[in-house]
Length: 385
Image (cartoon, rainbow, N blue to C red; front, side):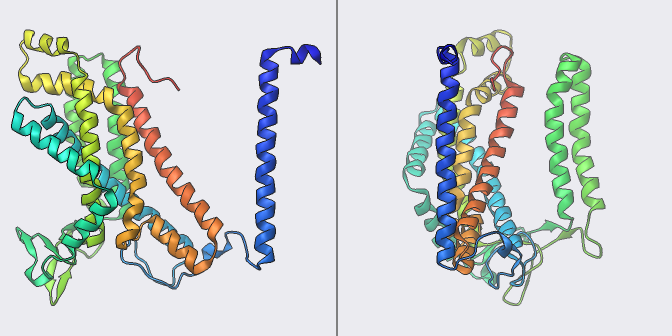
């Protein structure tokens, strides 16, 4: 026994086992005491309530919904609403951030000043205040009859943004997205197998040509029967019929998250662009590359490699920021869970679902971003697990 404890590795293992045992005992004690307290107050526990109908409605849903639907479907809708808000906000924030990063590194003094003003303004105003500000503006836009029009296809009013939509099944959209992701992961493997030869560039061009064609074919085959392929919004009476409607709550949140996140992502990209060694840029000029080619083939790829870890953190932060939707009445996962707690009283179970939902989303973001980081890492500098 003395010889076993005399080993440093054995002592470390024993110490870790004792700590884990204490933590496990504390957790078991907490669970037992919580169950006893709930039973003393005649409160039921478990997840059986998920099959009960909610009996209440909310403003926005990506799926057809009625008040007779169960808590499980209602929570699923909140989860999908959060994913939609996060996807739109993060996508626009990335585009804005790249543009701001370029402006901030511009040699034009006026552009650099405008970029600085943007970053310092939107980064230092609380996100919740920005959401309320944009919601106040959007909700006071003209009524549908006086809506702002873009080519009689897109309409903006105080009731939301109306735009055309393809009448295709939801599974086809997921299939097209999966096809695009598979193609992006297939390109690095193809580049290594063909060793950057001319055959690789030919296959790459053919692939980028066939990809949108394949998506169009999938969309056409998955169109909803007895409906036009493109559903256009049309003013009928006091409101628009057809097309897709983005409610004011969702529009305000997307704008707020995009502008707020774009300020942070802009600083991340600025740091990445500035980290590119000056010698590599000069080497591009020496080899006769044009400024655009130097940016697209030298500066931008190296900057993306440098900013990927920081960009992952920003994406996770912006996804967690979607919970501010509750202040303006957007039915995201946080609001659905909060309302469900008030209606059902199943506090612990619903909070556990809320935490697991955000863990699933954010761990998925981190996994995808880290996978991309490993794929694009320069040999010898791969991310270690």
